[in-house]
Image 1 (cartoon, one colour):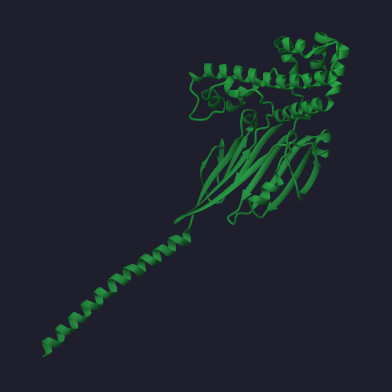
Image 2 (cartoon, rainbow, N blue to C red):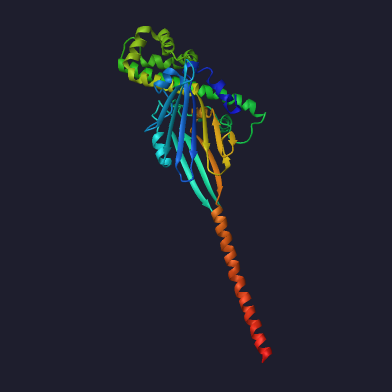
Length: 354
């Protein structure tokens, strides 16, 4: 496991139960052309149901060329290919739907720098974490966040303890935020029910107790486990009535949690091919004029994350043009000198003859 993902395992172990059959291997390849057009292909491998039902966390809007092929008895490969006139057209096809797909916004800059043309392509992946009621700054310092995201230089051995502490705080922050949303929806349902068997004041008074009792249960996809803890504390019938009275709120909660689980279950790889020579990137792998990021998606738990790469291409035509201009300029300076010298010699010859 890459060092940049080590924090993910410990910070999410108590939160997510990963089931292999639902995992998807997602790979995108983006080719940036000199004229600003972009060719993008998406390849997704997974089980039959996910592939045929298009249960993907990526938006693929518009007329893509699609193909599905069978790999083995349980695994299929989905491929989508499309050519875009410019980066704006690409962005239109990648607009995500909140809580169901990842939002991606691409940028492409082309700069003329005399002897070079510089290209910079970026993809900003929006944070998929919608459980942010409690600010992360109340649990982690900016230095801890940067360490978890591996911003800066290579990690030193002295950073290990700081990273471990940051992982614990990250887990606490995320767990509490998920609980906050669930607890808020529970209170909404309770107040709309107006049941004499249970008051909102009683539930609020036991909030911390309920958090400590249910925090481990968020590692399961079975909503009934969390519901069961509240039933044990407040009574089966009233809890079921409360949840039923806020059916829409709890439906959205389950959808949001399921989307986050899906994001973490999948593996991700993104490759970008650029014109010219790569001169800068935050990708881990560089091969020729292409770069590749792998398993970068977990950064989206904390914040937006940008994949970027910059390349430079030599403007040979400008070099040739500059050379021609310099030669012409040199000639324009030298020829008058020779011309004047020739006139002087000619005049002296005439004087000698006379």
